[in-house]
Image (cartoon, rainbow, N blue to C red; front, side):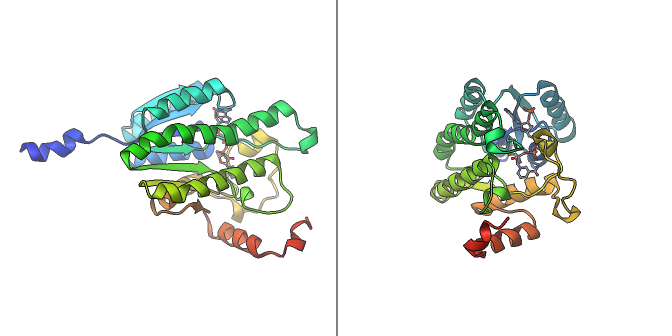
Length: 258
Ligand SMILES: NC(=O)c1ccc[n+]([C@@H]2O[C@H](COP(=O)([O-])OP(=O)(O)OC[C@H]3O[C@@H](n4cnc5c(N)ncnc54)[C@H](OP(=O)(O)O)[C@@H]3O)[C@@H](O)[C@H]2O)c1
């Protein structure tokens, strides 16, 4: 083998992706899809046992190496530890961790609402801020910010929907500027997915029609593919594309009739 033939493989390294919230649901799908696509992983969440089990699975099935960061993203300590790793450089950041609170705003514990804002919004802000300098220096990178279709709809909403609207605006606003630097950023806006999300948030979704449930692997693939194709907002599933389009043209007087 000549030196020139050996050079690419000698230089080749697996791209690195950091995923927040990979211990269940959509985040676990992101970790698996990224490992399948040849990435090594940095896995960030609170449940260390689940993180290590996933890391072993990714090694056994895909040959991926994983770093584990046990961090509570509701805390400054957890966000700072994750940001410090991002500042060293990653190829892909998936801001996926997030949670729902049920019940009326005025009845909900304020500490829980603060934690929701910290995980769903502040972590996205700070982790993206930490990741971008190295990506801009490298002239490439991908950031997938997991929002929700609920962040796109107008009308009666919750602190959860408000947090996801922030993620959409933030990502869309940055994405077109970053595209000039070779960085893909997308706001991924899924509809219903059967994960731990609704039980954790105490929400009964037993009445949701079967046709509205999305597969988490499909959603992860769509988000990554839409980012690669230069989309700023990704809405998986034809039904949800239709609903969000109809919502945009709905007369305002109908918006508040819920
Ligand atoms: N499921 C849906 O119908 C749906 C629809 C639209 C959008 N989404 C969004 O999709 C994303 C993933 O949700 P999912 O459905 O996969 O829910 P899930 O199964 O409940 O997973 C949530 C993940 O976030 C992590 N997480 C939660 N709080 C955290 C904290 N304080 N610090 C660190 N990690 C934390 C959890 O890990 P640990 O508990 O181990 O920390 C877990 O890995 C969320 O942003 C959610 O808002 C979900």
